[in-house]
Length: 426
Ligand code: BJ8
Image 1 (spheres, rainbow, N blue to C red):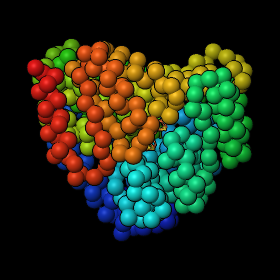
Image 2: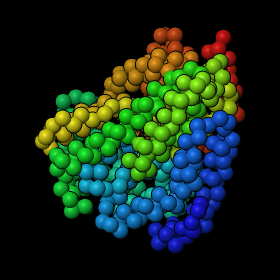
Image 3: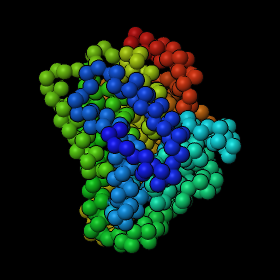
Image 4: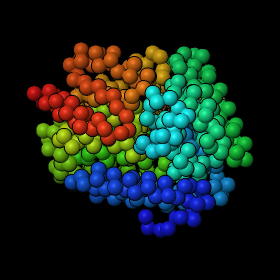
């Protein structure tokens, strides 16, 4: 990190010793997983810089934004509309944690059979090591899976200001009405916090910013389909992860710059990887920083991840929000329409997810699909078996991996992935 941020971290109330320990592990993991890759696009330097300053410069920007009176809103789910936060000139940050930290403390409040994502969110909050949590004025938790919904009843006591958002479980008319009323209630909360009214005008501007960000990710997704591949799955995952906490305009520019470079690579036949590498679409639970485990194993086996059907991936970014209405109510309807297309497994039934995976498989010219479920995640584990049966019936080779954040099962996963690659390359 280029500057000394100790005073800022102290002011935020971080536990400096534990935070140092976390940064040391994070820095080493980044070095081992990302910086050892060969032939990366040069413009990935921006993301290397972002990661080197992930608890430094970006937090300073957020702290400065707060000092200017801009509300900082931390979230755990892609159902929380970034557009509404930007409309009140707020800062939107994703808080899902992707590492085992403070597991013991988390397990004092949660049953052991809770998914790693929830345990990690608790561990980070209890141990006071996440500056994003501490810099948030409001933390939004949502009623999605049972694990999140029930654990938030305790999580709310670990943070400054917690807000619970109710979400529908079906795409019915009633579900749509619930989503709209919850988004309107959230808008009111944001207005109270910021002292700013949400108008058709500022909401349209916010929609445009988020649409551009998503469009840049669509561009990236298309370029990942190139044969031979021009960018690693790991670097693409990293961009999908940084999506949740970088400044949205700067992030969009940086992704577009990488896409320009990838287009040049395609023109000049500069491959990232050999044409024969097995091409994999990963689908399932979201992977927050620094959860690079599965991609790193897949790519170290000589295959490449060409698509991510996940909330930290195409599921989270797949649809743009329409903005051709001049009324606030009309824009809210468009926002609801857009967010209802998220193929989260908490929806029942959830047939569009399967359609989306098949489309991604075809578009990316993939050879196989790996389903990634965190242990004890009922929604994704429940969808996994029928999904595997349907995909296999359509001649789409599929592998199911159930895991957690620990490294204990890494070798076992590697063996299964190697066997899967052999199968799909036969
Ligand atoms: S829209 S996927 S971000 S809810 S892994 S905590 S589901 S038990 S994260 Fe999600 Fe929103 Fe859906 Fe996306 Fe529960 Fe499963 Fe744990 Fe999970």
